[in-house]
Amino acid sequence: MEVSMIKKLQRRFILLTMSCIGFIFFIILLILNISMTASSQKRGFDLLSKYIRNQSIATLLAGESHPGGPRAGDSLTPGEVPPNFKPDKPPNDWFNNMRIFSVLYSSSGQAVEISTKGNPNLSESSLLTLADTILKNPKAKGRISGYLYLYVPSKDGTSIYFLDYGPEREMSMQLWRICLWVGLAGMLIILVPVIFLSRWITKPVQQAFDRQKQFIADASHELKTPLTIITTNAEVLESALPNNKWLNYILEQSGRMKTLINSLLDLARLDAGNEKNAFQNFDLSKAVRNTALSFESLAYEYEKKYSFEIADGLSLYGNEENIKQLVTILLDNAFKYSDAKGCITISLAPFSDKKQLLVHNTGKGIDGKDQKHIFERFYRLDSSRSRQSGGYGLGLSIAESIVKNHKGKINVKSDGKSYTEFCILLP
Picture 1: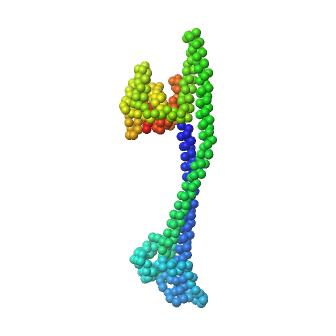
Picture 2 (picture 1 turned 45 degrees about the vertical axis):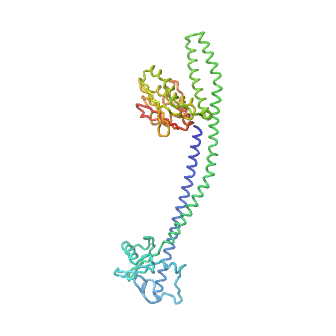
């Protein structure tokens, strides 16, 4: 039980640590991608601006004007151009110019010039459709269908310049993929020291559990001898002083103490895993049936309805005595906490590739808030009631340890009002 708890603690530490690292990595990757996208878009808009400026100055030097371009009287006039002026040339001039397209509109809103630079992947009609879309909701600059654009109005008309954003977008995606793979590889590398770190962090907890188990085992063994002496002496005195209430109290409490010590020893053995050394194939049906039959007298004594249905021919690789102890614990629990003249049933049947053991009893039931705690050691739903019935809150903990040692599962179902049912699946 403690081993399982330690492993759960290690898994939670690993999951939490890797989740934090993954979240930080994702944030860094997201910021990097956003900054790269913004930077590439800025370069694209700068490229468009330089292209438009060069085109406008070239037109002014030639003394020409065209719709959408500057002319005499605009902010830039032929007289303002220095005689020795040379237009700026953006880097990779031929490549960038080939991916800049334009649509020029007259003052009446008619498209007078559509330039696709002979690009086979872009038709004039599709470019004009994009330009018309921008005209319906004009913005100074923006992005549409994989293109960056600049909207340039003037007195003679309007010009819309497009830049094919494909290379920049592909570069951003390539960077994203590279960072993603590098990050994943880094997380796998980090996972190894995190696993070792989880073991190092949980080592003190493991040591504390080991010391606790050793203490329980040693204390139980040490208590058995004086308890046996006390019980033996009380029995001898009882033969000399019959019906002495003080001796009866001593014998009663000695018996309860013996039960507690035996339970603690059972837990110590199960925690140590020593019971697995005695695993062998045995007749599960016969073991459960024989244990269930021993409770018929108890049902008759307390006038409770008791029935069992055990399928024949089921076998199990495990410890037969432990399985009998498991059935005894569950049936004893069912008889103790069933209502007056209640009904107790036990069944064993194949379930898919497993064996299913069910123990059902009518009665008060178990509240939902208590169901997740009932397998904890020394946990009791009703302390006064448990003391009266001789319980210490160890029976179900022992039952869970037995089931886990046999690589099975145990669950409880109850509506908290009328019934309780324990379901055990064994391989």
